[in-house]
Image 1 (spheres, rainbow, N blue to C red):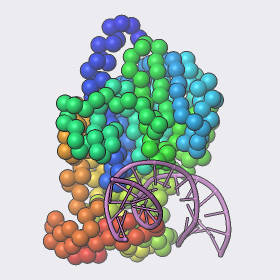
Image 2: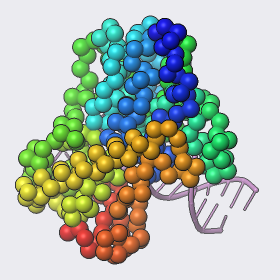
Image 3: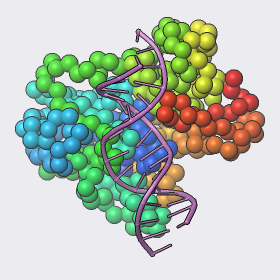
Image 4: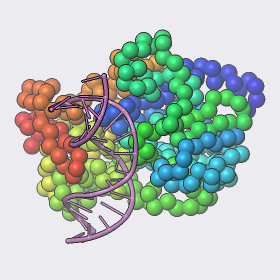
Length: 317
DNA sequence: ACCGCACCCTGAGCGC
DNA sequence: TGCGCTCAGGGTGCGG
């Protein structure tokens, strides 16, 4: 990249590409991963990786750091795709870098200042104009520098549920192979074909990445509310029509979230932490005891498969 | 094939 | 004030 190619970097530095992902209500599901992909792609694609810094080996690194460094150095990123909740970077030698953000993963450009990158105390006390650019901490597990000398790309993940793996050219990854069709593309018929032979709660099927890839806890609850189905409803009792409506709801909430996420993070993070505006539209998730926005009944919370599920006892059956 | 559950991790939020 | 406890959650893997 020539000197004039730098023009885009200064503008990018003040931009937070970090979507959500602080605690509970900000899990990276399909929309958050997709928004991250769109924001991070310009800072990745076409650049030559010059240096790789990591933290100590851990199960976060499916490829051990020393090997990861050897494989990435000198490579040019040629594309950045999303597969379910995974990001997949293609490199110029045909190898690929697989990234999963886990629960708390944050992928962003060096120089980003985001309240979500700070401690809760700092978020509460710092005014937006006081936000410092984020400095790498013990949770910043991967730092890529580039031959153009521009800003680095960092991957931070406090709980280390995220994953980084290098895939040799042509290497098939079991995690990717297991994924069902992308949640934005799955059809009602496909969902019904699986649901009809599963006796577990329908929510469990929505969260099964092998059935449809990309739905997490928040959007599963929201889509079920929109469809009027309780999360506890046994999957095999759903009609084909109900499955079609459910899939349509899933796709509606995912698309809506991509829209609001994309716009809200385009240039600034609101001081009250309300970026990733979809949370304002949440009807049930994390609203236990609060009135249903449609009928006023208190939202209920139950546990399904070790995970919380929220629903309106009047609107959902 | 299907299903339930323990596990990985760390910070927030609670009770005392 | 501060300690210790519990909880949250995606994905994996194991035992039934």
